[in-house]
Image (tube, rainbow, N blue to C red):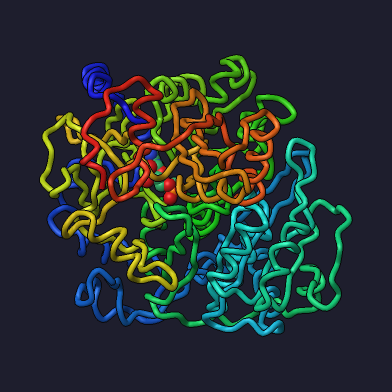
Length: 635
Ligand code: PRX
């Protein structure tokens, strides 16, 4: 949601109110002297991260903390040996954590399960042994297409433990999108489920997976988790039930000793072209920053229960449903359902039932809850809550204040955390001890150096919008784009000289607080889901009636943004409601239900630059009745 400069000024004036941390929060906070900590880390960020690295287990310590001799292919903890899954699981075995609840899971219909750390450890080991039997080896890619269930965590941990690289594809993607990602990663195994329920309706994951795998000859085996029990087509030669694969497997397995810089996973995300980018994260640095942030930002400890409402298919789920909470040895809650089934108080009921201490969610969900009204959270006893979190898109001050008042009862600080698939972990975020401003992500996390600059990399004055950049390197940073290092260099390190280009626009206020405005205009955030305009436009072009299309995001009161498409039809084809429906269907088939098209407008031509680039910004400005602005500023 881009704000105009008048709105920015208003935000600046209105938001000088500081929400100070309560005494109770300060008492338990791991970091109490906020300014002191920021200063200390700023003096030597590399030293800060080296200290943080002591929180994880290393089979062998590093030779060098940070190595920039092959920039921008930076390395952290080079020479060290570790394993991400070992840190999340193995290291707890034989400690009091082993008997704690690792995962609570509940689905929409109310079925529930619980795994202790020891139970989780055993099942992960069984799957490690099972996958090995299927021929999975260190460095192989395993695609995962699963709903929000414990087996997703188990599959990821098993891959990491044996040194295979997991590639999770969000279950809201279509067969085509899944196929494309499997092919790009050259995965040889797919782990999926029979299906899932969404608002009581069956989501037929297995048949989507079948359609995807049909065109992926490299995939030798499909492991199927029995989740919702629906009938599926079973290919005896290729498919194997998850429960049969792990049955009779030993509950102990060897953990692969990985180099800190070995890839742990690839996660596809949308960028400026129609081809998604396979973002690579590694075993060492990723573990260090995910653990340090979850500990400091959410201050979790002991028997606390953490609920991150994201899906494991996105980076938020990887880092803060699975790896972060498990590395911290606390309890993570997984909910396989939508927030308003059977009633709009489902979220609050779950908070009450599982005595959730920290709730980490997204602005789109907060706005939806806000729409349902104050009465719903008030029906529930949510005394367990200590800290709240938000992620994925800008949170408008009104939603922030509602969340703070009606959910946090004015006593739970809100950690509005800015980060990306590429950053791996939180980057700009308050800590519980920091004074907060409603709608701001606060300051960079200790050890992170950010700024707001113009096209040339020159810092812009306070209150003025510009490009959000990161000026140093950080342990959980993207290492490369799978199979495409040139794209990695071009996308992140060449747009503005010598800094990491985030693709976001933001401004800083006079206190150094960041206010994120949204993406520069080629990536959309629909209900927090990241989609590329080019990806959607090429999906439209799959329809035979379409010459070309341009899509933009328009402000939406709940979803943050909704998609509007401008479509040029082939000569002689007349626009109609039926055609609109067909186009929506085509996009759904190509990308998946995650890409919901709001409005479609038929047009004769699209505004373009001389070199033929579609000027989406012009379309957007026209739609919003704004001045067309300086279109040359487009990067
Ligand atoms: O535009 C920013 C927005 O989400 C983008 C990254 O999306 P993705 O890779 O899907 O990761 C989302 C979860 C980490 C960013 O470039 N974004 C993320 N967090 C915030 C945000 N925008 C504003 N405020 C945030 N807290």
